Length: 244
Length: 244
DNA sequence: CGCAAATTTGAACGTAGTCAACAAGTGTGG
DNA sequence: CCACACTTGTTGACTACGTTCAAATTTGCG
Image (spheres, rainbow over the protein chains, first blue to last red):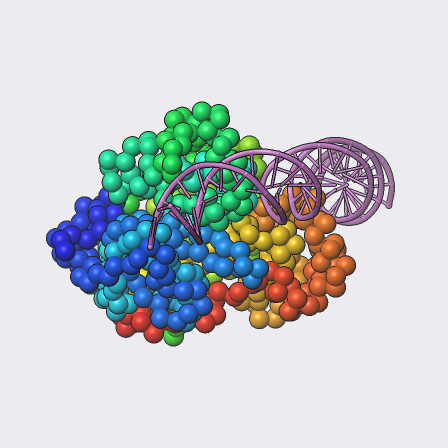
């Protein structure tokens, strides 16, 4: 297996040295196939493994006492999985495959070694973690303070942008690969209401739909409705340590 | 100024070496007083500085297009502030003092040096950041999937626990130091509805209130209503690098 | 083709928001 | 010390956004 998906993400942020690339390839030496619907890690269970997602779409979610589910994050190729579980005795969230996936498991000791041998990569892991944090707070603000329509619009935009980040060929039309129930669990709505919001976005000419595929017709209007910000842009990383 | 507040937090997680303690004290050499209501860093403005909060209560929030506010996080002594803004050209969130505060500003280059000289501290900074992440996803799930009453109950429990983390003397009765509007902006509710929920918690015997002070009368019932988890417990950090 | 899952739609309901008025503090300057 | 303004808290009446429940329809998979 050539190359490292995680390195691909980090190299969008800075130019990696050959030494750094080599270190990152250690994270993706092995690989494991994961079937759609399979669980990589279950909430409240031990044994936090770390992974890089190489192919496919996954999600992390939590289940609440009443059985309802909150999807925390969708995971795309190049994303590092399991970091928030590896620091706990029991995982705080479940990792589940939304499509057939390929992941590269790696040991915590490899991460630990990375911190010792490659300070700049360690700092980049922190930066990556902070970008994810800001994306999470965007969603927190969306759930706390925006309408159902705005949340669905934001999800569509975010999904398209993150698909495009891994595959430049993704256009305004894409298969979202989520059920309306999953969209609801991500946006804090019911599946029924998601359906109505999609219909409304369609009637207002912002999107078109055809058997699971969505086309963003009026991206400007969607972004306005959603007050969406792409958090992988306008970064400032000049302060990072020199490469090892 | 003796000691480091941030070191106090990290030493709850692992035993710090004298060398590590010394490095952390570098973060808190200077200090600055911040008045109640003052803004340390404003959303969409440049100049992300880093800080350790030494005294007082602060919050981070975002403003949405319609003027509404979402409080992202309350900040307590020992918390590191500004990390998510330092990686961007414009800060993604505002930092504002809820009481008179003391902060220690430090340069990004100091953080950078920490990564080079103290790999284990760097890893601990990442761990700290991940604990915060899990706390954020807890709140995401609360906003997406729980009732108004549960969200207010969760906020009260969290506030008490975090106050106690910095001051062991904090009992079940404490001054929360927030207006009902602020509680609403944190929980995604209106001030009016927060008022009703507090009254309801009071009528059900879970809390008592007296001029800004709150007493948690039935902590068990509150935790059940809120499905609250203390994320600073049950950690597993045996895999960290050896101290430098 | 046949079955299960997902989508779609309607009607009734309920939680939380909105608007408005008043009370209780809090701080400031006269 | 009091008068005034302003913020915060409290309560009621009404509204509305999103949920719930139910049933029909479509889709996709084995």
